[in-house]
Image 1 (cartoon, rainbow, N blue to C red):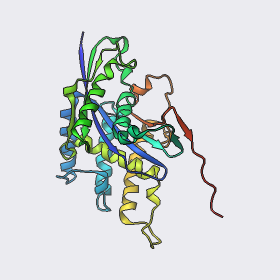
Image 2 (cartoon, rainbow, N blue to C red):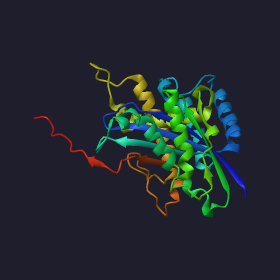
Image 3 (cartoon, one colour):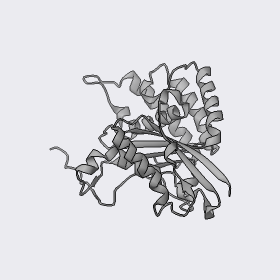
Image 4 (tube, rainbow, N blue to C red):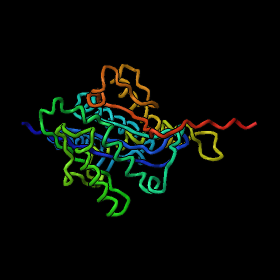
Length: 282
């Protein structure tokens, strides 16, 4: 029985937005591809003159062309299937019912768990359970207590015993769930740029103007240009038919959850209700 190893870089941005919130992102690679792809991406960064971390919040008007070129290069690995990217977020159009203090206190971990469990369709990666598949999780530094982190790792490891994964020979070893410093991981940095761009566009922050100004700020305009470069790459993957504001469809079959190079998922709890928008002011 052969062994296969995958690594998932995870990032999140739970900053609230007027329309969408709780953004989580992941980049999945074969573990043996992590080092060679990271070397190529770091070489591209150096070529573009970046010795420091590249990230969405750092973009200025001087960075547009270089960030756009970096992200186009990053998408080469996505279009070739060597990196799979998934973005999950929640919509303000739906409200979860019956939430208790536990759910509010542990929202960060509960949503992360759902993201790792479902977003990549890992249950479809090992047809007929032919191989033994091992998944490593690389998390951005978690802003919480050691005890909560410990329980979260236990829950991720226990995924292999849930109905979704039981009997599929897919494992999440506890020793392979790590926190990382994103400044040292260029694959994570590319994911951060994509994730940030989606939160920016979906919440229409590209339209915001400084208070009292008739025009948008230079950084807002710069970020919108980088977003457009990212969206163009996504559209190339989907023959110009990708809608960033909805969950990506399965097209042919549910194996699309695993097969597709790039997907979005609006997470909605089963016990959610649609929120009725308030009437416009008169």
